Amino acid sequence: MRTTLRWLLALVVLAATVATGGAAAGAAAPGSGGPEPGSPDIKDRILAIPGMSFIEEKPYDGYRYLILGYTQPIDHRHPYQGTFTQRFTLLHKSTDRPTVFYTSGYGVSTNPSRSEPTRIVDGNQVSLEYRFFTPSRPQPADWSKLDIWQAASDQHRLYQALRGIYGKRWLATGGSKGGMTATYYRRFYPRDMAGTVAYVAPNDIDNEEDSAYDRFFSGVGTAECRAKLDAVQREALVRRDALVARYESWADSKSLTFSVVGSADRAYENVVLDLEWAFWQYHRQAECTDVPAATASTDELYTFIDDISGFEFYTDQGLEPYTPYYYQAGTELGAPTFATPHLTGLLRYPGIYNPRNYVPRDIPMRFRPHAMRDVDTWVRHHARRMLFVYGQNDPWGAEPFRLGRGAEDSDVFTVPGGNHGSNISQLSADEKAEATADVLRWAGVEPAAVREGDAVARPLAAYDARLDGRGAQREPTLRP
Image 1: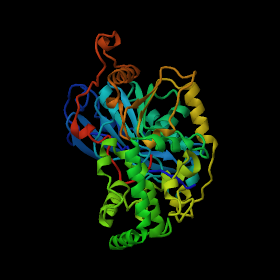
Image 2: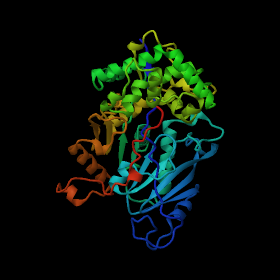
Image 3: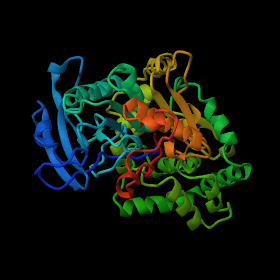
Image 4: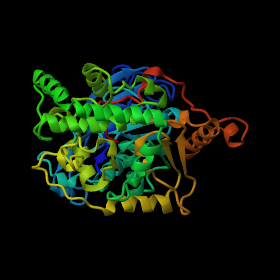
């Protein structure tokens, strides 16, 4: 029975955020994004911290938005063995507000945006680029120093550097791999953050046991929709020769290559196998009407596969930015698999869905099976003030974090019919109010009326389409 591995996702890098105009000038009221009366400019205060460097400032009304670098040890256990500069962004509102520590688990966006918890608490936001994602990669790159403890230690060290300026409570957050990152940070440094909000975070405890994904795909959506997707996948492999020829021609026209996966044919098989997972990750049941019939023209099939899975990703140029993710998937995080009996006899490359096949062979990899079990055990028995949000129809939620008897003041909520963009605002009314109240309370900014039960908890900051409209942006890949 063919098993396949599902990747990439994309709860997008919610970048850090906003800056008011150019330089720092005149006094402004607290919370305006300008300097507090009588205090030094926030950029000057940040740059006075040893190891800080300035990259750029972008204007945004009501905030200061700074792009910065911070010198980190390559190995936190042996800091004398060299350093690298790790990029981060700062969305500054006021030092008298809470601060949200956002991580995507990938690179950091350099355009202003705001995570949901940041809007809820009306606070500052620090967004950190994950180590080994360019340009935050040590040179030369010792890949053995890319692990969840080293990354958590990056966060801990930056938090320690900034907490003297941002002295109010901090919360950690992130979506998908960012939600995983926020959870791992809390496991290794449980006292840094006052609370954690982890969105759609996979939890692959046992990399060899993935039956949860078989159960998920046998029941997600409607039987009719599942059958349509299965038929398109199968037909895409039946017409493989014509479609691969078109794929190769397109890649040649773009000067795209296939050295890492091995050939356009191998890349094509990956793209087709991504189809069902990608559909449920990014789309909803109502969009099943857009799935073409198996009798559709070859042009229609090609366009649909490209729209859902994306042909560019398995080229060398598409994979290269995500080498650090696949390295981690093949050394600690694990990688999901599920059965595809409807494709029996049509697949040419058994075992191709494996992280090792997406990382250049000159980078050594060895899987460490204890890492995820350790985190899962800690969450079950020691979670404090942690919130996990999942989408009912998101494949990455098939293996979620769960809470045990030792967890306190923590919850796991699921958005009905939700996909990989699920968040607090999409929960049922009661759960949305409860989750929002928790975030406000953890941050120390819960209004008295909410605390006393006289008002429903709501975000303290008004919705801003430019800052808050990017949270579920899709990337042309299938990974957490």
